[in-house]
Image 1 (cartoon, one colour):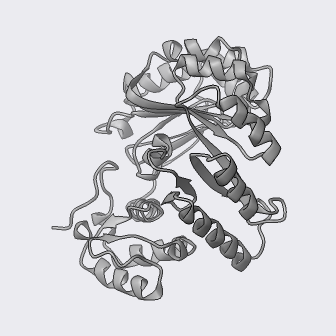
Image 2 (cartoon, helix red, strand yellow):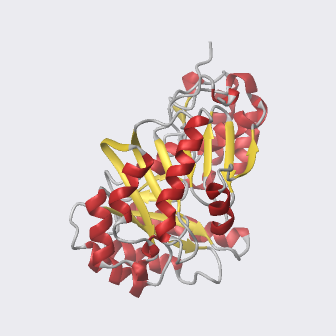
Length: 351
């Protein structure tokens, strides 16, 4: 039976594949994803036959058999659209030349290195040198005692390795807010001097290296998540799967739905979420597509140094990004929610 919430939803062109979190699940992963994909199609989730982005993450890609990448898209009955991005997350110490060769041969165009030591990243960078033209990213923890010297780490990654894309993740045990903010501003300033562009609050890229999947998610585009712990969003509905691999796999093998939860935010929550996600992007919001009250808010934020003095767009500065939650709530309180529930691909236009 078709899911009534899917009626009229745009076709989903961005796919997230959650990896198993145990090392003996690799051979079962691909077939499980294929079963879930067929189930989602039967439920009415409008998956495209060709995807503009596929992101594989959450677990350990190195546990997969080298034959899995090449057969994965065929099993899922999907393809990559021309110019699409296929990204895979790796722990830097686990990335080997043979694994990289298998994923690149299957069509992978981006490698995302999860947090690791500089020595581990250096070893991964040497492997990546053997695949010219491949985009790659490094996730860096900052803002806490578990991530000491984050500013120096970022500087060395940018200067010594010329990492094309860097993402910041706040440490699980952060310092006090003022110290976290100071470190963030230091990192943002350093990367700006080195030619990186902050395309969103926590992500910095050299020209032409912005990840397509992450950008699509932050723009509010519909996306499908398959696998343990994966989230999906379309038509105003969000669902997420069971996270433990064995629990997820058991449901799939029994022909049951692996969904762990589901929500459909009301119009006010959707409006706030939309504003929050767009304000964290460098491009911000077009002022001529917002109600007039947004102009007054924009003017005050510029005066406070929280937004750029841009007459056409409401764009937060780095200092504004540090207050993102507060500023998004303030803006949402000034604007009619019914005018801020746009199609995810198109900004709303005030009449």
